[in-house]
Length: 304
Image 1: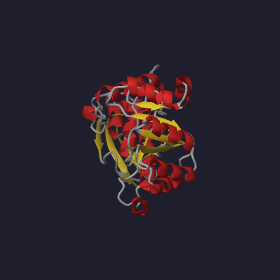
Image 2: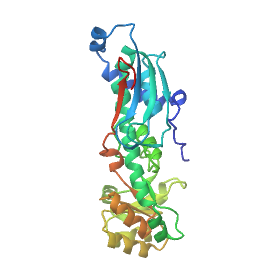
Image 3: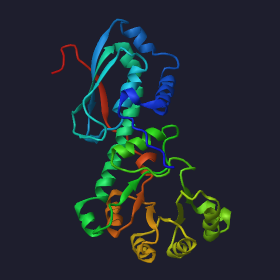
Image 4: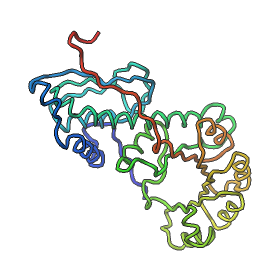
């Protein structure tokens, strides 16, 4: 049974998965307290602050950032001004914050770390999705459903729930959440099982009937073997565009086609135009740049 994907857009309903991540991050950063704020900032000091986009980006994780501040001090008020999934420009105020200066300073880095990473994932995902679903690509696909951009399990350890949510904020889709979410036979499984046919046949005998069986292939000969063995999905791993086009023709609709390996935004448009069903992109989560976002305290003279 497919599990419902968590929604981390509401600070009041983040759920245990997100709160555990936030609490662990806060504990890491505040293991010895915040000595700078304790010695330099009066305990009674109250501050107003803003979360501000310093570059164009797709927002993800605002509620998570708000929760990071409020887990330390429920008296801190965070007003969210945009929604996750929105594209914003330079200078956009994402949220207004009011409360104890010490509390805001203590949670600032954790809030920013999570918000910047999640917005970075969402921004990169949106770029790939738009490349795969442009009008030019849609015209080439004709009656085919839009090509889906998916993530992989190459997430930051401990942050998978937030990473996957951020991909969805960017318009992408999630692949397997964990090793129990689907049968994906890869190179080492094939070697351990004794070949593609042996691996798929064993999976057919033992896997729950509700799980699709996907098999990784590296050339058209392996593709033919996987199709003959009954794979529901074939993953074309590091195959060039000409080989992908040949694979689509050979498959003839008998299985879904996923492409993985060596994926750039430029290549996504080509692959989607050829007619593949899925493109999995590891870089959405394994090497994503953080979005440029700042938390700025109100200056003494007020905001200009």
